[in-house]
Image (cartoon, rainbow, N blue to C red; front, side, top):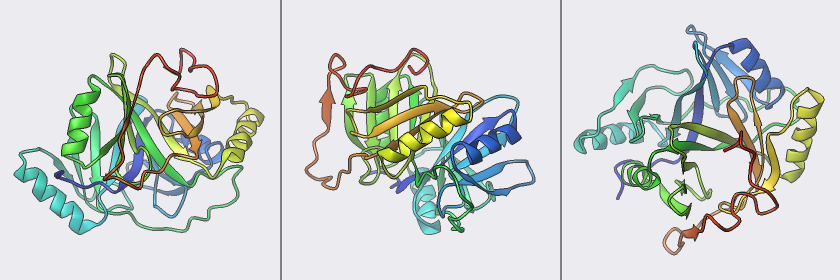
Length: 284
């Protein structure tokens, strides 16, 4: 029994040197809609009825500020705070914090990644004008960590994630709902975010978005292809501040938590891309 039961990945907050440039990229190239801006200069962007999937945080540097997990509602967040306190796990309270989500809690995972827990999000209109491609949700976040097993123990025991697949001791995928993974962890020798992923409707959307990138002076970094773990089709590209973004579709669904047995992949077999080569050096 875990201390907290997370429902899904909520959003990613990115430290941003040039907010206007990034906001334009996420609107015009990624296909998001700007929901709101706050008095600190943060920009909130959405891809569906949730108030935001991406938050651009003005900063002198680039990279992950924090990412957020939704526990369901205000009562669940209050219960989470009580349970964390009883377990002796320290956290900070954010009130009012970011727009569109009410109070939140923030804690650090074993690698120091800042994890925000929220109790639901304001619902707004999913319509914000035509886009070449509009993702339908934020799918997952992949983090670089020191020890995948240690990360798995923390996210399982504290936040209720379940292991879906792993590759030796170098990569591990975890879920908190039927999606094969909402979080993934890779051991690479340093700690940061590797990428975050948006889900699109189907493979035709991946093709359409690749054309959209090309027509606007951008190119894919890697893909299209199909991952082994999760079975999803993918394409990766970078934003102007070099954050790595995945567009993906056809992700494996796991409905039988009681009987599902995680697959253990061998790092020597094909798993990164079932269709062809592993990613370029810049991807790894």
